[in-house]
Length: 49
Image 1 (tube, rainbow, N blue to C red):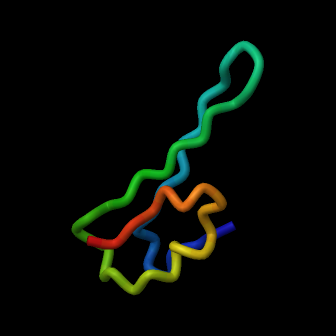
Image 2: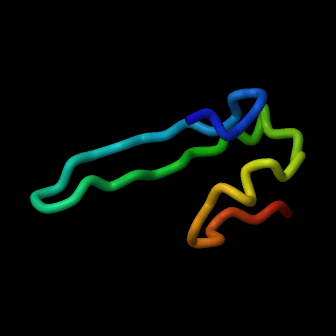
């Protein structure tokens, strides 16, 4: 699923022994601060400063 309309968010996955770990990385040079990504994070871990 692509959350960011300009591709400023990359999904990085790594496999552990039991679960996979998913980390989102934001390219601050591409991010426009539109806020479209805020509704997609179930843990409310994304903020716009």
